[in-house]
Amino acid sequence: MAARLSKLDVPIVTGRIFFPRPDPGDPAPPGSTDLSIPVEGGAVLHARLHPGPDGGPLVLLFHGNGELVADYDEVTPAYRALGAALLVVDYRGYGRSTGQPTPSRIVLDADGVLDFVRSLPAIRGRRPIVVLGRSLGSAPAIHLAATRGADLAGLILESGFARTLPLLRLVGVPIERAGLTEADGFDNEAAMRRVAIPTLILHADEDTIIPIEDAHLNFEACAARDKTLVLIEGAGHNSIMAYGGRKYWGAIGDFVARL
Image 1 (cartoon, rainbow, N blue to C red):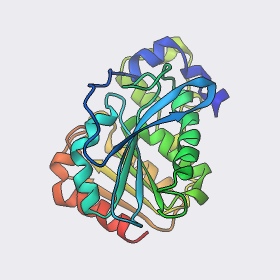
Image 2 (image 1 turned 45 degrees about the vertical axis):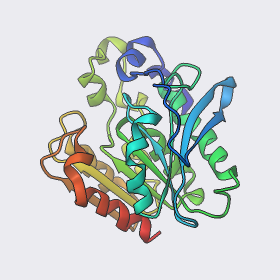
Image 3 (image 1 turned 120 degrees about the vertical axis):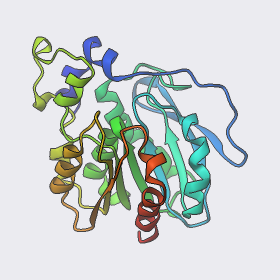
């Protein structure tokens, strides 16, 4: 994985796909806890754990490329209402996390994050873990679902991509000059063929950043018998939650309830 993605670990790519922001400095909401997750090479990732009802699933969320842990504080009551706890993690260089983000690191760091989460006393053996990847976060989420399925109860993809090159072209990466091929990318579609755990795919039908075709490709490739594709009508890439309403939250609620 690291060797394949190393061709993307160059400024001409990282400068186009990562948009780290500093942490706003707000304290965690009452009852929530900020965590520091050590990962390979001495970097430390910031995460925030929002508790849910005892015994309910934990949703481990890898966010989009312009988001932060703090951006999800306002939606935690919705997860709690579904009976789930929520843990959101920042990539290297985002918020309070140290280091610099690269394509290979956001994928490889996911293993360290999952190991850390599984070791938490509040989680260990007490909660099923569902990994959720939004947009760019679909890459680490799919990686975990494909390689660590025994440690997970399910996979949720929100606005996830299947192909790398169309996404890079959209953000202005000169593909030909950089000498990149699809084989150098995240290869989400191929990885989905190794995903056997229950899977929910959510996608906006008017997404102009990651087109709806990617949702269909990931769904068709997914090897899970239990898989569901939910399309949110009239929504775009960044409005899927707002437009989705009951359909969006109902799909997630039904999914986590049956795990």
